[in-house]
Length: 418
Image (cartoon, rainbow, N blue to C red; front, side, top):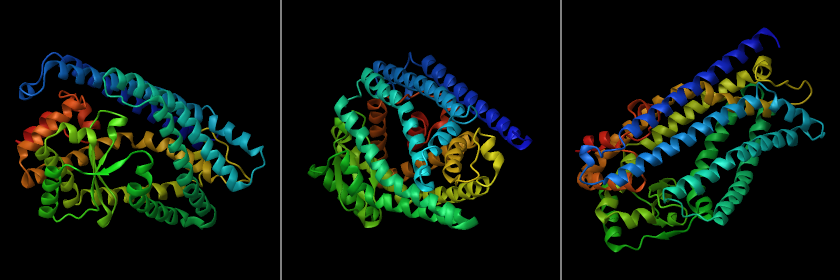
């Protein structure tokens, strides 16, 4: 290992250790803060949320954070095994003995890494669904449905991911030094294609979508859409209750093909005027162009990352510093992609608070829009019910919330609405 490789190995190891220590420190702060405030409902919620419900939310939050700590530690160990301990290099060398064609070999390498990563995550996914969610009364999914979702996800991932990976790898090998610009264009087009296909082709694989039948609610929604000048291809109710008792609502699709989707659990729990207020909040994201702003930022960052990858892919120290010997006779494009996406989260972890801050700012703006279009009190009531039903803690640690929360904490959000 030359000096450049050694320096990069040390930088990577330091960044990984630092990010892990920050993650564990933040998690411990959250556990301690939530546990310390478990015994009393915050004054502004005392009339609406019972002490048992508040304690359930605290226990659920702590359980999730502790599971996340274990996942983080295991993830870091697996990452070190793949890189500094030579796991990826060993897998790559083993596949080269199969004498596969260059493209097939690279696709097999990518698929193998993703499959092994999925197998590592599988016990955590099972535990979260059938132990943690079950313990707190949220799980409604059978083992058969969980396995069916898993199989569908694998099929869908292969059907979509393999052609995309093949095209990116082909560009890396054939498009010269500016391959990363073409690859970025492919990713942008792919994202728009997924937005178009998701509501009518992908989502129905996993859930049933039925037109909204509640006449009172339908009339409220139609009036709201007209006031806001918003067009959609329909309002649908999704059978989310077959998997979980958590409630939610979202927009999906593109242009006039946008769909409004409510979980059936949300419809059952909220009053019509409260559902209208929640929808007004989501409409606010569209009317205030939050979606386009986020997409523009995402595409700009993707372009920057592709440019960085385009440079790193030609640096021998990038491979050897991460425990991989690049081939002198075969393309190393798949190795470059894998290593880049291994290390990118490590070096960008401390930027997370910036994204969280921007997201919370958009949430405040969407709340303000909803309060203008509907009764702000209805949105407050809806939020309180959703916090209670989803067992969201009312007392998060402030620093943890600043770092991770994409939505403002309950107390801050409702204070702003009031």
